[in-house]
Image (cartoon, rainbow, N blue to C red; front, side, top):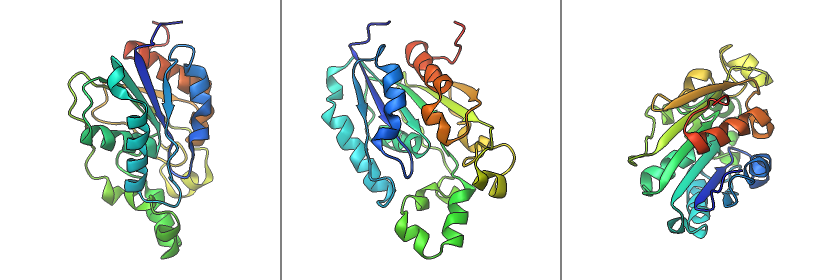
Length: 220
């Protein structure tokens, strides 16, 4: 077990999820990282900007200035929120960022949900607007010297929406090309589809490895 008492870890859930969905990651990281803050955002019925404001409060309450370094991990939309947060708040001690199943270039499923449920989908689930490919034409890369970025991607298209509306190379909700961040210093692939990545041991082991060593080589 590493001594990382000088490290703050921030875990961020995705669309239509809650802080409790990060509990598995937290439980499997806390032996190495005792200081963990978990965002619990209104990611179902409030806007992307509202979620971003909530995330900002979570980080502020964790007193990031007290730590030598900060490591971030976000699942799905959580990765987008972390990128936006760090771009607006370039914390000098931000050290690692792992985006897990993150739709960096949006997801076609957001377009389909808004189309098939029009006009109600966008009112019921406002974050959908920020998840459209049209809203994600450019990737947000935080301008923080020394920040190392990793991306975890799945090609297990096991969720039925992905089988119906996405290409075969997808994790069930996000296509692989969208999750493969071009600014990533390292990319790894996991077997678990999109939602199960929140509860997958291999996924959290890779997050731990990246936080500790800046790579996804579990054999090192």
